[in-house]
Length: 218
Image (tube, rainbow, N blue to C red; front, side, top):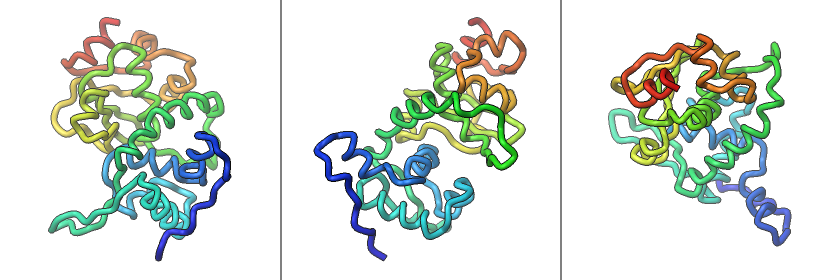
């Protein structure tokens, strides 16, 4: 099936042109998921609760048409198709970070109907690490909801633009953080800083890398 014709605001304005490409519902959340690197369609669908298969397929086609993503087949024995961000798609990282910071105050208490995935806290925690002067190397994060790992800026470049990954870090991380979702949300809302949360015992830090040392000594 070919991509649908792009709808446009038909306004000679860079913000309007940007929204022509990413303003549809689900598009930026798909970008959020693909900041973890190549993902299969089934994995994307599993981590985007509420999106229909038809809508997800349509958004992925639109994003490929607009140069935000590419689709390729993995070599055997995997042989599955995966979607990944292009350089143009990865350039949306600061947009998502700014949008997340702007919307952090809307989190409040988690509602009974709210889905949650551990890695949805990746971008707020990466921002908290930067603010604490501890955004170095690979940082593993452990929550009750699951584990994920973060790539600090220099490492993210080496990883082809990947910002985070699901599950434990490959190899020994420079720092390992253990905390709960409530503390993650408080960090995202700016109610506490990461250094304060470590001092208060709300975040447990282990590891011998620069990030762990910065958090323990900060």
